[in-house]
Amino acid sequence: MLWGNRLSELRLARRSHFDMKAGIWTVPKELSKTNKPIRRPIPTKARAILERVMETYDDVLFPGQNLNTPITISAANRYIRRIRASLPLEEWRTHDFRRSLSTGASELGVMPHVVEKMLGHELGGVLAVYNKHDWLEEQREGYELYGNRLHAEIGDFVSVKDIFDI
Image 1 (cartoon, rainbow, N blue to C red):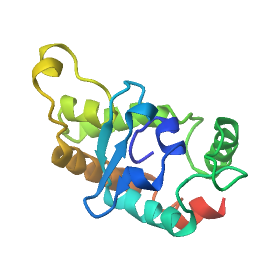
Image 2 (cartoon, helix red, strand yellow):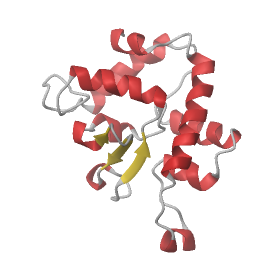
Image 3 (cartoon, rainbow, N blue to C red):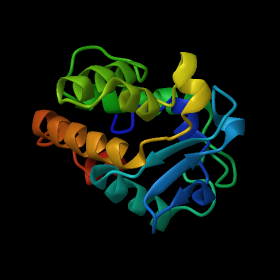
Image 4 (cartoon, rainbow, N blue to C red):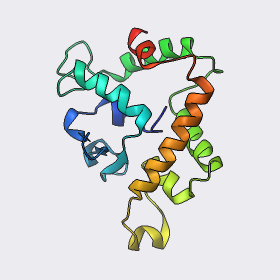
C-alpha cells in the first residue's frame, strides 16, 4: 500500500535487501519483473512496519509455515483478504495499490518519471538509454507525500499493531 510494489517483491524480501541506515530497499534483479534491480527509499510510514518485522523475523521477513521460507502467494492472498475485511474501502486487490500510488502521487505533484521509478518500471525511449538515475530523493519525497495522504484517509482505521493482530 505504501510502496506500490509488486506483491512478490515484498513477499520474497530478505533482510539483506534493506539498508536501514541509508534508508534504501533494493529489490534484487532476480525478484524484479524487469530483471534489473529496483532501488526504493524506505519512507517513514513503512519504516515503522519494517522495523517491527525485522524485530520479529530473521532473514526471511515474511515467512510462511516454515520461518526460513517466504509466505506462499496463496497464503499471502488469504492474509490480504483478512486485511481487506478490516479496511473501510470498496473491494480492492493488491495491484490496485499500484494504480492508487501512481494516481495519488501524480495528484500530489510527483513528476511522472519519478512515479514510474517508484513503481519499479523501466523508463522508455531515449530517457532509458541515456539516463540511469533513479531519483531516490524525489522518490522519498513522493512516498512521504503519498504516505501522509494515505494516513489521512485510513490512518484512524488501521495501525501497525492492527496489521500484526489481524
